[in-house]
Every structure is written in structure tokens, then in C-alpha cells.
Image (tube, rainbow, N blue to C red; front, side, top):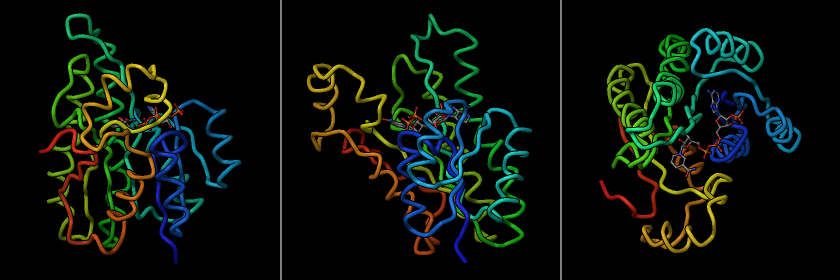
Length: 241
Ligand code: NDP
């Protein structure tokens, strides 16, 4: 029987590549999103993947949404915590709202999504939790104190929870992408990309969303059962841990 995989923020960008790769590999996939119905409906029409709308920063919405996905598709075996936002500002100008929105989505969202699936995974003695963090959680980035703090928090979450899940057949790992050619990054003016961003990347190019998706496929597989609490840095050599 094919496993069920849920990808938060799975309708656009990196998440869309992850959802699509999981579907191609034979998983039953649920892709969630926050509010962009147009993108989600277009993604659903193109891929046939089921889409669900809720806000990962609400625990109750996550518990309710997960119950619906499990009623539709079956118990979740693979959870990819990919949904994320930025609210960039230099620290002296950062508002409490910019801080909270990013922490609530990018860090508390992992608790809200993982907690409701955890007991079921323990009971079934299998689970794969894959958290999409960021290079900026590893190295820190000016103008992104909120984002860097949340993404670094995701790595602590991963390492601690991995220890709790290990004896129950649940692995918990993180991926830290560098610059990936999503809509957001491709929207940066070409001059800035070519003169300021790409020169910082030793392989000399942006990453592709599919390159992150392939890391997810591996971590989700039975072959990766001995890997837990780990971080894959997929950044073209931009930051070597
Ligand atoms: P996008 O902005 O392209 O897509 C984000 C997705 O997350 C969308 O589906 C969006 O839904 C969803 N989302 C946002 N907020 C919420 C929320 N509160 N509840 C539920 N869903 C939400 O992001 P990327 O593909 O660029 O990034 C994906 C992940 O990878 C993020 O965690 C990001 O931090 C991380 N990352 C990205 C890098 C990059 O270069 N792009 C580099 C390093 C890390 P909707 O469509 O409704 O808005």
C-alpha cells in the first residue's frame, strides 16, 4: 500500500516540487497552502494532487486539517514541514508583528503540524518528519533576525525530536537549502542575481526546487532509516558547516 505524504506549503515553489516528486514516487500526497487559492487550484489541476487550505500557525487548524487529510487519504507516514514566510527588516526597524508572524509560521508551525501526527506514527512504528530549514538558520543573515532565529530553532526541534522518535521507527531530519530558483528568487533583478548573489555560490548557479525534492525523497525512503537528527545542507557550497 502506498504511503501518505503531507507537504505544507506544497502548492508553490520548493513545496510544489516536493509534492510532485513524492507523487511520482508513488506516495498519496496532500499539499497544503495558506491563502493563494489561484496557485493552489492551478497546481491541483496540473498535477491531480489533493490540496488543503489552513494556516500552520494555528494548532487547532492543523489538528482539524490533519484529521481531514487522514480521513480522505489514510494515516500520514511522511510529513514535510516546508511552509515558510519572510518578513525582512533590519532589527532596529523590525516590528513585534514581523517577529511573531515569522516565529509562529516557521517555528511554531512545526510543533502545530508534527504534534497531531506524532502519536499515530508512534503507534504504527513508522514515520518520517522532514523539516525545510534554511542556510540562513545555519549562518544567520542580516535583515532576517526573525527568519534566522526561527530556522535555527527548526534545527534544534529536529535534533531533539529525532532522539524521541528513534526507538519508535520515526526519523526526523532537516534540509537547509541555499538560494533556490523559486519565483521569489527569480524575481530579484538579473543584475543583482548575477553580480551579487551567484558569485557567493561556489557551484556558480542557483539551486533548483527539484534538487531539494530529491533530498526529501531520499530522507522519506526506507533506505534512510538509519539517518535521524541530521541536516542536509543543499547550498552549492555557499556555507560549509
Ligand atoms: P514560497 O513562498 O514559494 O511558497 C510558500 C508556501 O508556503 C506556499 O504554498 C504558501 O501558501 C505556504 N505558506 C506560507 N505561509 C503559510 C502558513 N502560515 N500556513 C500554511 N501555508 C503557508 O516559498 P519557497 O518555496 O521559496 O520556500 C519553501 C520553504 O523553503 C520555506 O520554508 C523557506 O523558508 C525555505 N527556503 C527557501 C529558500 C529559497 O531560496 N526559496 C532558501 C532556503 C529556505 P500560499 O501559496 O497560500 O501563500
